[in-house]
Length: 61
Image: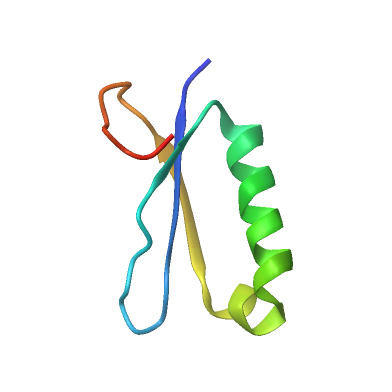
């Protein structure tokens, strides 16, 4: 199973710190929960990215 990085970008260019998660499903759950908590306007403006982790990333887990 491949670990995944989850992060997002705001229209201003600001990029969130990536989170390193156990798999694609966990990344999607966190993305969906963050969108629900942030509200519709935040969810609409954010561009989400889920990418593979090389296992030595140093990102927050």
